[in-house]
Image (cartoon, rainbow, N blue to C red):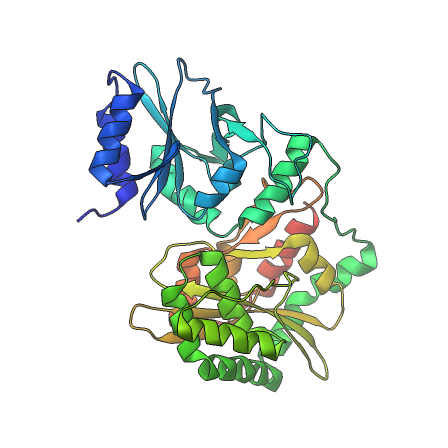
Length: 386
């Protein structure tokens, strides 16, 4: 049994360095992994791959239409460039595209037109080289970023249009309120209000636990799975929730629904605090790095002197058990392992924070609520200054 299909794939491709033709390389790889051919893309349950030929290491040939990439963006999408002496592999999911080289003037977020070249694939992402050794690591980053977010950035970069994001401007008085947010978070987590909020969310999970487990095992697309589970817990439209439950239980098509991707999923006002809580689903066996929050949106929210922002992680494991943890965004382990992703967030944005999946797994199994005020203060100062 293969320990990691990607490692086996790359080992085979490297063994074929200097092979006589791209066609022969394609045949060997396709037969070894029992790949299905879909026009120029070959795929299986573990990855999709496009073979391309290049006379040099400039890789300037056309690879694929962006609309076709969308179909495979949930899998590691590998581009293998055959050259006379060596074969090169890059991950080319939408997160790792700078722009489109061949685009229509009609390219919009609601009208995907155009193709990308090998030169449009970033060869380094946030300091990580895009090569054989790092492709699995890069894919875990990509899993936390959905295609629609990447599309917005690609459209901006390709058409050279004005950025659509909104950068939150901060004056001295607002800065003071924001930098007091860690102190507010500490007071909240030590108050009875924290226990009330945790109980409310836990009761939702208990009520819909069977449906959550069914959704976790039957919905293959990570984004749809997360949206459905998060709506079961925090959604406001009861009729839509019932329609989702019916579809999950009968294993039929899900009703069309759109998540309001505002900052938090669950809002709760207390006497001394205005809280928003972001609900995040974590399949415990997957080493994915979930997308956290937009930095400009969090700064704007924290400019309210009553504001407290919390994270509610729902962990689902192989034994079909559900565990939960409610923690502050300033929890020490989250702060220590933060990753700020700016590449794809748009030019008019401070970027987005991404969580380390291993830390989330650890916090779900062994909750730790520690907030070190100085470290949290320094973190806020860092993102304010971006």
